[in-house]
Length: 221
Image (cartoon, rainbow, N blue to C red; front, side, top):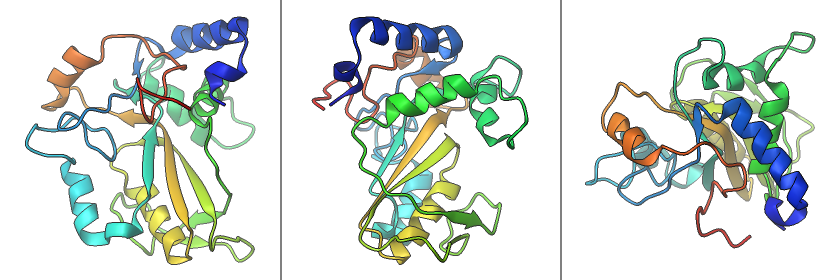
């Protein structure tokens, strides 16, 4: 059942009001339009293409080893100044015990994006910090049961996709049946084209947590 179906009218209003108040000014709902946004990572693209350059290159090199589905829950823009979406999503990376002022908001974003996802956990550890897609960047811990399972990878921000897709390659190598990547936000760069024009024409409304990031606006879940 979808989030909209599970919450009372008061609950839906509370979730929407909290997220719009906290992040509505700099987060926008995901836009999925053929030949307008990348079919994988929803990056604004030129009409002649179906995928962004980065996703095309990864598809050529790795094919079916990549994630089955990439789901950014929102689009974000701005810099790292206090009060921007950059701050809101990066707070999840802070170690335990360090103040994370936006953690509650990020938990709401994650929760509203995970409705209906069937997932099984596994632990990975990074062995490289480069932002290129590589099959040897991550390793599966010895006690992880990956083979034949449906795995949900959670990423705070999708910038290039290299980290998340590298983890997907490792899981595929260990025979995971299905890999889905959930990114709390897709980071857009307003200074680039066609991103600037896309933001002006398509990203005008505040973030609404009750809009499905996978199949909006035609979600039937």
